[in-house]
Length: 130
Image (cartoon, rainbow, N blue to C red; front, side, top):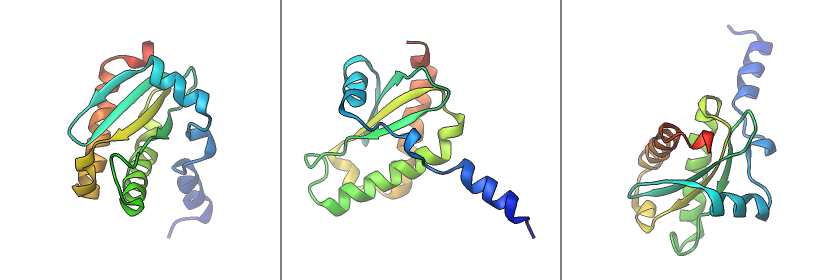
């Protein structure tokens, strides 16, 4: 049986704190204006060096992409979870994720895999050095 301190330390290291999110309009605008882009059939990922040690995430899941609120919320939940689990391995970038209309018909695992693939493409393109 694991010690409670060990369990709480593991849980704390993979939380999704406020510091891991883009919060203001100006933060989003900067990423939209100066970003490095990667996309596939489900998602579009914009990335920009943030000068910090850790990656941050912003979501721009529009009604144009997913008409129903339940679909937009599912897409956001899946993207946040995939990002949260991979955040420790990511360089100091700000990411904004947008979706394509076909994303509403995709499974949760396909959405998560798409995000991870796009994050890897961005990392390989050396967007962290921009």
